[in-house]
Amino acid sequence: MTTGTPHIAQRPKRADGRRNYDAILAAARTAFEADGSEASLENIAARAGVAIGTLYRHFPTRASLVEAATRDGLADLVARAERLAASPDPLEALSEWMEQAVRHFSTFRGLVGILAQSMYDEGTPSHAMCNAMHRSGADLLRAAQAAGRVRPDLTPGELFDLLSGAAWVREQSLPDRDGSPRFLRLVLEGITTRNPEP
Amino acid sequence: MTTGTPHIAQRPKRADGRRNYDAILAAARTAFEADGSEASLENIAARAGVAIGTLYRHFPTRASLVEAATRDGLADLVARAERLAASPDPLEALSEWMEQAVRHFSTFRGLVGILAQSMYDEGTPSHAMCNAMHRSGADLLRAAQAAGRVRPDLTPGELFDLLSGAAWVREQSLPDRDGSPRFLRLVLEGITTRNPEP
DNA sequence: ACCTGAACACCGTTCAAGT
DNA sequence: ACCTGAACACCGTTCAAGT
Image (cartoon, rainbow over all chains, first blue to last red; front, top):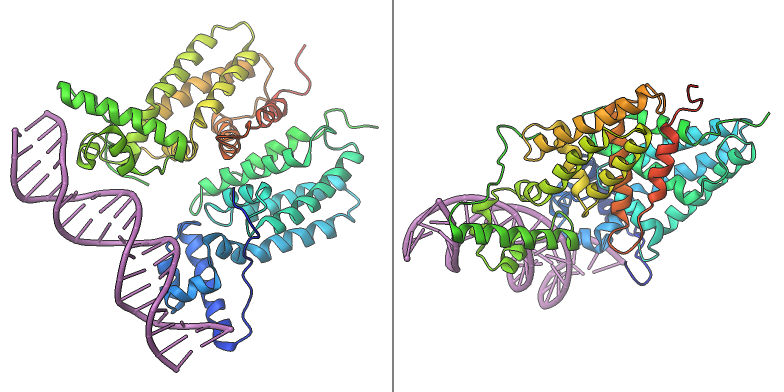
């Protein structure tokens, strides 16, 4: 449980600051994908060609660096949900969105744990984005339920538990192994209604 | 990927060694439940009243300490499966076993990740126990499938992915929150057959 | 056989000094 | 406003010396 308003990293205005900020983010993404969310910060700074203090200036906590590194992916997910909301097939829309969600949550080891925590901890940098994503996913779920395609008692919170579980299983097999898309299919088949309404 | 034969901790024969071994194990269990599998080893040694070298003598790797601390729970799980195999209701038997499995996998944060790795990494201390558990669970699954109560295309590997995912979701909410027994119920309802054979 | 604890390595994090 | 890197703290891990 974190407290207070979380720090959200901002791209600096001054040219040298912006250059370093971008270099750190690029190095962080590479390091996270190789070593997971606990990748060495000193190593990230070194690869970005900056001193460790510069990394801390832009990203005062590890969580703020992870947030900045995954912000775009989460924003994409929200945008995708908004486009899919117009789909004529709400179950297909939900499935596609869930696939993308699981893929993003398992971008690197440790991410899905951070996101799961952020979901219910307001003091966390990723909390705002997680909330937006939660809302957009809940809309797709509601539509699929209204069409009688998904069991009506499934809550958005449960949907995210299922997505997180699927992402975690996939994450376990990173980077080499394939990643059990079968898990998500089982979940999907498990939550669709047994006797679709005529 | 670990390599070579893993170290399996053994309870020493000499009285002083046995006393320390037991004290370390008790301290480790407490620490793991409070801080997860990454709990400080120095802290565990201190709480057990031994020097850090003594901890390393008995448990040369963190994985060997985790294995020793969770060995009994896994053995219980195997024994339970053997008793449940005689049950007249194979679906009920499978469900009960899955519940206990998820509960054990989420004894402390980080355990389910270690077990999931151990499942396919022979060089890991928990590999042997994980294999035994896998076999005993597979037997219950096969029985439930033979009775037409569980979808026949579900493999034991997939069953363990589902169990691991459920345990991970539960682990996320440790120690305070309740732990989503709903996840497992959704999974169970998802894998039972839709049109049970007459 | 077993125990101790100093020694080393590595990394996170802060902060005074600088441009 | 931003950068640098020394300094400190903490912890994992090894090993020489001891009983």
